[in-house]
Structure formats: structure tokens, C-alpha cells
Amino acid sequence: MATHALEAVDLVKTYPAGRKKPPLRALDGLTVSVPEGVVLGLLGPNGAGKSTTVKILTTLSRADSGTARVAGYDVVREQDRVRRAIGYVPQKSSSDPMATGLENLVLSGRIFGLSRQDATGRATELLERFGLAEHGGRAVKTYSGGMQRKLDVALGLVHQPRVLFLDEPTTGLDPEARADLWNEVLRLSGQEGLTVLLTTHYLEEADRLAGQLAIVDHGKIVAEGTPESLKSALRGDSVQVELVDPDTDGSVRVLLRQLPGVGEIVVEGNTLRARVDRGATAVPAVLGVLEDKAIPVVAVTVSRPSLDDVYLQHTGRSFRVAEEAA
Amino acid sequence: MSVAHTGLVFGRWTRASYRQPALIAFTLIQPAIWLLLFGQLFQGVVRIPGFGDSSYIAFLTPGIVMMTALMTSGWSGTAFIQDMERGVMDRLLASPVSRGGLMAGQLLSNASTTLIQTILVFAIGFAAGARYDGGAGGYLITIVASMLIGTAFGSLSNAVALLTRQQEALIGISQFVSLPLTFMSSIMIDPAVAPHWVNVAARYNPVDWATIAARQSLAASPDWSSVWRHSAYLLAFTLIVGWLSTRAFRTYQRSV
Ligand SMILES: Nc1ncnc2c1ncn2[C@@H]1O[C@H](COP(=O)(O)OP(=O)(O)OP(=O)(O)O)[C@@H](O)[C@H]1O
Ligand SMILES: [Mg+2]
Image 1 (cartoon, chains in turn orange, cyan):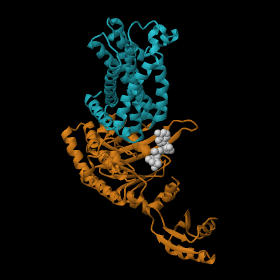
Image 2 (image 1 turned 180 degrees about the horizontal axis):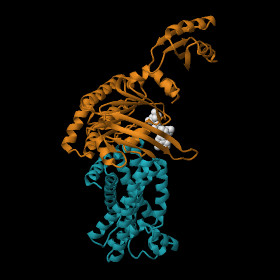
Image 3 (image 1 turned 120 degrees about the horizontal axis):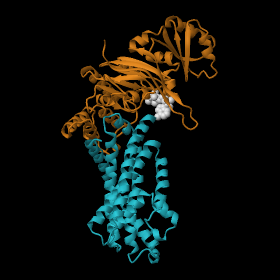
């Protein structure tokens, strides 16, 4: 039997009704598992249930029904063991702004039972590794957002957890810092066998980091697999048509829809993205019909399925559209 | 409850309060103003029966000590609210930190503020002419009672913070509670001249228990049975609300 560092079965979580607010089923039978040493990327639109899943797996919150084991321990019956085995980086910044970076790390280490000396050593090492060494003595409230986010991740690592939960760790990081963090996560999972559950809104991040991907929508996993297997499960190609003027009345969309071999179409501003059976035959047909109607075009491109197409297929929303709506 | 965790949490909040000089100044100036303001305001009260020959400022000082402890502790929960608004509370609650330690460490830090305030109020009272016949024991009992008030109402404030998760709700509730507790007591007015219903209400008011214990123990010939009885009530009240508010972490975790 392959060892799973993390296993959740049929999680259901309903948030109670509030004023003028009906009860909300945030998780609706979510099942997911992550083998040891693997990075699992949890993708999904806002409100899909990613953070709720993380909160249940970290023992912060409790599911109404369903079971979950993390690092071999039951998240309800063996809470304390789970807590000792995990690191949790919440979606919101989790450092104490009044304390310095070093104090934050040392306190966290000591809560996990490290001696003052060990905690200080470990904190210094982490500050170094996350490029915060010269800022360790400054109050966190004077840090930039990106520096705070790095400290958050460091806080999740002080006690050398076996399973790390990262809830949108790179939000607010510049591209360089993001790449650094990716490398760090890859190093930890590769060299130290750390298991990581990561939620993200960046497809590129999921593609780069995650050995396994799970797409969540409406509190359920709607697709699961390696990024490659998810992409190759999609038949056909993707055609993008960039127009000079936006297709405000939807007429272009209707025109393209009538062509043989064209599947669903998403409109984003001036761009239409269509799934087609074969790119090579679809492109001339698309260009032909646009020319007939004298619709000015900037560019037509064809591409193999991307993670964005996978996302579109399973959530019915283009990733970017979902992002903008948020 | 883990002693080590209590110490760590206490250290965290104590360091944080040293770094807010404006807040320190405020917590020290406020009781000074109350003492001098109410002292002036109610000076005439001295001449009504029930005050004997002691000065009103001597009567008022232990009352202001308790009022200060009460008012300051009402804010205690704002520290928790800030932790909840960031992800600090969530990170801590998903760690092996002891819940009792999380509560007790913060309350101890709060109680150390109360201690400093109490000493300051006494100093100002002394400067304004308050003298007490009771010995060191009287001061000690007053200090302990004020710290119990700070701890009890601090833990209630923390519990309200965990349950409402809103700064506005917390401040609203703590003001709503602390004003009646102040006025339905013998903090400013001798029970002999207060309306009957106030005296009845005061019997169930922990702030009044603390005030009575303090005032009695500072007197020339204290009624020790009254001092111990009211201190015991106060201690029991503090332990009960402390235990209840630690349970509020569970309610909070159910709502995240
Ligand atoms: N504490 C809460 N009380 C009530 N409802 C909540 C609470 N937390 C989350 N929800 C609701 O549960 C659903 C799932 O929320 P969750 O935070 O898990 O989404 P998410 O996938 O993490 O979204 P995002 O990408 O925006 O972070 C949402 O509809 C949200 O409004
Ligand atoms: Mg989230």
C-alpha cells in the first residue's frame, strides 16, 4: 500500500445561517489524498472550498462528517499529534506585527517545544534562507507585504513539519520572490520528503510545483491527476481569436459556434477562446468566416491544451474570468 | 494548562505593550484623571452622613483602583481580535499551544498592567491627601483584588472577542457592562446614602466585592470576615469565568 501523508474522505462542512444568509455548504463530499513527499496543488475559483479544506485538515476547523488523516493521525481523535506533525500557513498573514521577525519565529519554535537556543538557531537559519536575515530584528509591521508573506512561510517551517499546508502562499509576491519560494518548496519536497498541500490561484504555479493537481468547485473535487495527465485528457486544441473590437452583441461567438468541430467558447474582452477538435482545420475555417463578414482580426493562434483549458473544462469558467469576477 | 506556554504567551504580550508608549501613557493618565475629577466632583459628599471623619479622597481611591482595573480589562479582547483579523489566531490554534496558556498568558500580561495602575492610583491618592490606618496587608489585598478584577473581566472580554470576532461588538458590550457595574457599587457613593436598589444590585457585583474587600482591609480596624468572604467570592468568580472563556476557543474554532 502506498503511504498517504494525507487522506480525506467525504468531507462535508456547512457554515450555519447568519442574518439574511442561508446556511452554506462549503464542502460537499470532498475526497482527496496525497502520497508522501508529493506537492498537491488545490485549484479552484473563489469560494470553492480550498481554505475550508485546509482548515479541517490542520485541525483548526472540524468537518460535519467525513474523516481525514494527516501524517497517519486522525484529525479529530488525534488532534495533538496532527498539530505536532504539520505546518500551517494561513491565507491571511499570520505573523505578530508588534514583534520582530526573529521573535515571531523563536516564539513559534518554542511553542513546539524547542529550547530557546535551538529555536533561535532555527529562526536564524530560516531568516537567512528566506532572504530576511537583515530584517530579523525589525518589527514585522514595518515589513513589506512580500516580506511578511515570506515570514509566514518560514513560520510554518520552524518545527520541521512532515506535512506543510500553504494557503495561497505566493499572493503578493513579486515574480522573483515567487520563483524563490517555488524552489524552496521543490527542495523541501524533493530532498527532505516534505508533503505539501498548496492552494493557489496561479496556474503557472500549479504547473511548476504540483506533482498532483486537484480542481475544487462547489466543495467537491471535480478533476484530479498530474498536470500532464489532466491536459492530455482533454481532446483537441484551443484556438484564440483576438478581435479589433469587442464582440459586444455576441454575433462573432454565434458565427464561430456554427462551424463544424468547434466546442465551447469563452469571451474575455476582445478575445474569444474556443475548444476545437483539430487546430489545423479549424483555423482556416475561422479566418474564412471572419473575412466573409469583414470582421477585423488582430491575431488568431492555436495551442495545445493548457491548464487553463483544463480549468475551463471542469469548472465551466475560464481561469482568468473567474479571477476577474472575484 | 501548560506553564511553559503561559510564560511564552505572557512574554509576547508584555513585549508588545512596552512597544506602545502612547498606550501606556493613556492607561496611566486615565485613572489619574478619574481620581482627581471624581474627587473634586463629589467632594461635597463628604459632609453627608456615612463618611465618618475620613476624607472623601481616601474613600474614593480604592474604588478608582477597581474601576480602573475594570475599564482597562474591557479592552483586553482587542488583542485577540487583532490576532483573528490576521491569521495569527488560526495559526496558533492549529499548533499544539495550550488553550489555557493562550488565555492565561494574555491575562497575566493584562494583570501586570493593572498592578502598575493600582500603584499609580495609590500614589496619586496619597499625594491628594488619602491616608490609611491599615498596614501593608491592606495594600496587598487591594492589589490582589484589583488584579483579580482585571483577570476576570479581561477573560470575559477575551471570550466576547472569540464569540463576536468584531472590535465594535466587543467595545459596545464592554462599555454596556462596565458602566452599570461601576455605578451600581460603592465605588463612589457610600452604601449608607445610596438608594436601596443600588445596594441590592451591588451585592451581586464582583466589582463591589473587590471594593469592599479593599476598603475594609485598608481601614483602621478591618472586619476581616467581610474581607475574606468578599475575596473568596471574587476568586471563585475569576476562576469560573476564566475556565468558561477558555472554552470559547472551541466556539471560535467551530465558526472558522
Ligand atoms: N467562517 C466562515 N463563515 C461562514 N462562511 C464561510 C466561512 N469561511 C468560508 N465560508 C464560505 O465557505 C465557502 C468556501 O470558502 P473557502 O474560504 O473555503 O473558499 P476558497 O476556495 O478558499 O476561496 P478563495 O479562493 O477566495 O480563498 C465560501 O462560500 C465562503 O463564503
Ligand atoms: Mg481561500
